[in-house]
Image 1 (cartoon, rainbow, N blue to C red):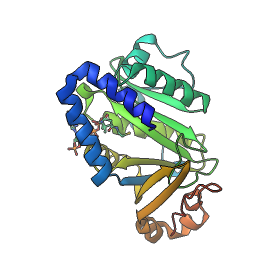
Image 2 (cartoon, protein in one colour; image 1 turned 90 degrees about the vertical axis):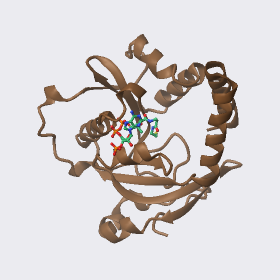
Image 3 (tube, rainbow, N blue to C red; image 1 turned 120 degrees about the vertical axis):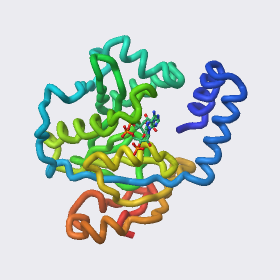
Image 4 (cartoon, protein in one colour; image 1 turned 135 degrees about the vertical axis):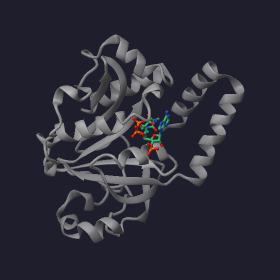
Length: 244
Ligand SMILES: CC(C)(COP(=O)(O)OP(=O)(O)OC[C@H]1O[C@@H](n2cnc3c(N)ncnc32)[C@H](O)[C@@H]1OP(=O)(O)O)[C@@H](O)C(=O)NCCC(=O)NCCS
């Protein structure tokens, strides 16, 4: 996130929650950036997923949107009012312009959470280059009153099954190592661990430092040599090869 975005988010947080809460939040963000900035990366071979055997009627409703027009104003308001509305609206617009899809999950017709997907590339510099068929899942959010009820695994599972019909590549997602809720949640999805790494972007160059990527090599070495997960970073990106 850019410095101006962080400042704008901080200002909105201050308006809503006051000085003490903002200082506490800023301290937490600084501690996470300094001491737990590592990300845990996961992958899923979507084409190997089997169609669900559950009764589709009993599953929560999941909607896919590829533009803002058909998102209900109420849902849009819910999504954007959580942090900085102005920033959130700008991000949504930018993401749709890049070709991303926004997936909404609803319980009893009420918005319970959402997540984004983008095929072939990522919004921000990533840890490795995606193949044209690969899909990045990012920015998942479950509204507080629905947390701990399996909403996120249900949304992620539903997205992966939908993508299986149209995508021959791999899906990727990552979670910060401090985000125990997201890590626990991803364990309930078809995603599998593929490594952990840190990345830094400085003067438009991204450097990636892998902490661990051997599990995938050991368990999936054969596929890894052929698959896009092994791709190196873009020209001059400084993004390292996952196999190193
Ligand atoms: C991470 C997140 C998407 C998980 O969604 P979820 O639908 O609650 O996921 P699950 O139901 O699988 O619960 C996962 C874990 O959340 C934690 N959890 C349970 N109840 C909770 C509650 N009321 N509030 C917060 N966290 C809770 C638990 O650790 C749980 O794991 P456990 O059951 O093994 O103890 C959600 O907590 C969230 O939106 N967090 C803020 C945004 C975020 O971190 N997004 C992910 C990074 S992009």
